[in-house]
Length: 189
Image (tube, rainbow, N blue to C red; front, top):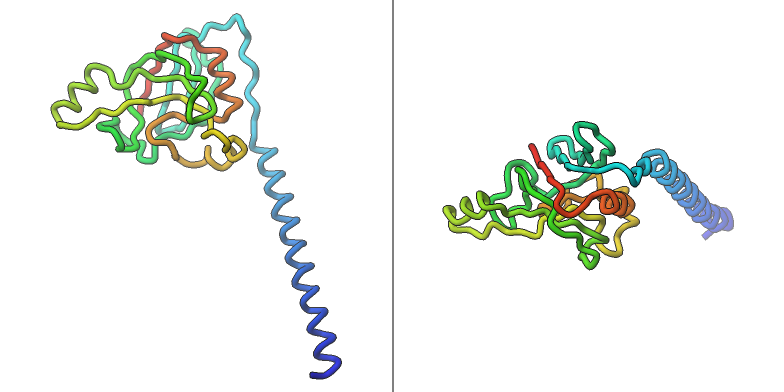
């Protein structure tokens, strides 16, 4: 092998390493800029504000906290992996549609924190019985899965739950502070 070939080969290896490092730096910087520019922190909800209803619009992937007819705060949400249509049975990955209540708060959830939705109601149970299936349950508004809060920027761009309504960990903290057990939740297509 000639001196020139050996010498050029060593330089081309360093050139590929330098190009690779440069591209990695550009991609990383772009990701940081994107996350920072797209992570809108919601305004704090005043302690005196009474949230008397939550409205979830599945087709818009939005959860709204309402006081009377006034929207106090809105959050981008992720739903079940097959969100269109009303939940029919356990395991269908659908988020239910209908009127429910928030019946308890869960600090020991498989997700960061959660609030339970009273699905299935009497009509849901009757429909499931007619179909001969288990209606399912454990529908929650929750944060990210434990240990994965740092991936909210990615997870909230897709439907990933088994029928629950997911927000970021910071957002579930705010929602749980603002909402009382017994609050109405209306979930619409």
